[in-house]
Image (cartoon, rainbow over all chains, first blue to last red; front, side):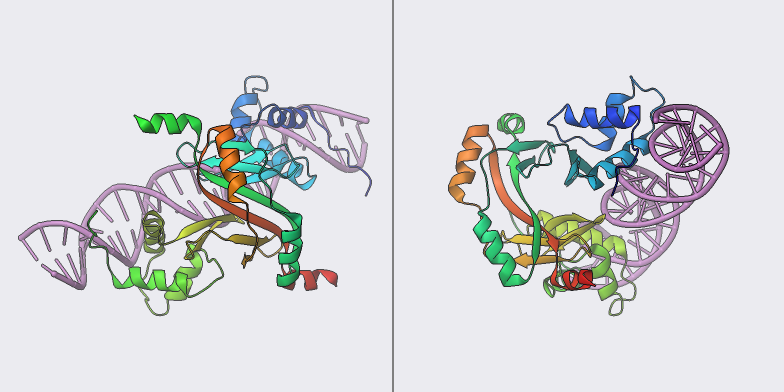
Length: 133
Length: 133
DNA sequence: CTCCGTGCAAATACTTTGCAAAGCG
DNA sequence: CGCTTTGCAAAGTATTTGCACGGAG
């Protein structure tokens, strides 16, 4: 279980880019963002590193929104809001499921629950305004 | 708001197939299931009808699991458990988010919340057993 | 006859992968 | 130098779409 020698400048930059935003970006976004600084960066590398981050639990997937996977460097469980109009993914503090309920439900169904995620859907502030026109 | 003339035997069969199971099937599963009875059914038709069901709110998407979208004819909001090993999607009764919390969080963030979904992840009973070997 | 729904196949969109070359220690 | 990471392009998978045909009213 010793640590692997997994380091590279690009890997670091990809993780930094992911951590630099709370927009829960796509692989493509990270690629475009880093491209100016690393002109020879390739999309495959972004995907490979994201997959690795996920294994190492340095990042998680928020799910697929409009056909593209969204990533999050915030590994602590928290609630997300997804705008059904523009696809924005926004962190929502203060919405929880009681641990008791989880434990209870798990027991009842024989499930081993490792994580719990809440997703709200609706209109984000921007789209809300735009819709009223 | 008058009803469209959207009827066909296949359309009905697709909806029935979706309603006949609680396994939250993929488009492919529905296709394979119906193929014996409708030898000339095409996958495109399944996709088209599923998309239409979603618009008409006869079905919802549970999300993408292992690259495939999972559908559910149970439109009422309820909690899902996703097995991280085999990808099974299972209904879980009795886990809720308090409506107060939702309203509160929505106000605070200026969000218009239309729906709320809880997803648990872990190992299903089958995979749990298989893992202990 | 006029539409709507469909089969079929081609097109899309996103992600993964094989392989040779470059990079790190 | 040995092993890891990457670029590139090809492959893979899931889903969508264009078009002409077939069935219902």
